[in-house]
Image (tube, rainbow, N blue to C red; front, side, top):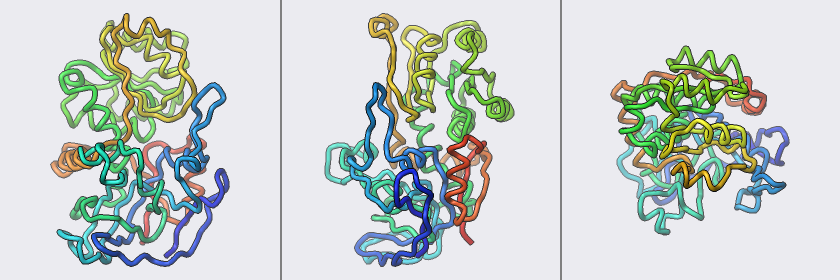
Length: 353
């Protein structure tokens, strides 16, 4: 099969021909129909994360080996399956849940495979969707999408699931009564906007330093779009929230500047959900965290049950389509480069014939 791989960190993706897997046991082989290009792929391509204070989290030391076929937002058509795979339609299109754990630890046993300490995620630890075929380790990780558009559905495996899980951590009592502040108006930010609408939320104030992305957020229904680099950004956000400090924020960037700004506009007892992995170190005044009674919560993608819940909303027509830009599979490297340069508005998806 043909795949596009990281062969050296920070080097261009290379086209490789590898043997097409033959599924065993409960494994399922899919022909890839669509593969989302996610911002997380940039960190994989770079080989690590900035932890601040001169420290770096090395993916090589965390079990990521090269060559790596990235791609964790994948929809594929069933080609073949092992004898233990059940409940599948030959030729049917499936969204793949990629955040796979060891299956044996307390997190996995509790249905929280995304919290597993020995993960085996597709596109990270196992070959993913930047290929014409992908092997899924068990049929339970497949969600039938029927006749829905594969390119439109693929991003739900990460950007959709990630923002849905973050909103659940805020809680419907909060997001239905108060506007949520969203940092970042890229693919995840626009997805978060649509999900707030779908869940009956009170709307969102979007923060981004890019004017084009702020405009995209306004066009997608944001209550306001604020330049996070403005000296009075916190005051603008409070004004947009009705003149009161905000109850909750979802940081889809995860940088020192965004987390610091969130600290300034959140109310006492507010919640900050950090999703983004831009990196760096925080300079919060520690004494003010208990004094403000802030909840600072990390949120890493979501679990399989949450993805199924999200797909029920999509099937019911409650989640409007988000902007998707389609590219041929062999453009994987150039699309990843465009995403690194901040030139992608909405979501970029690789598609196959």
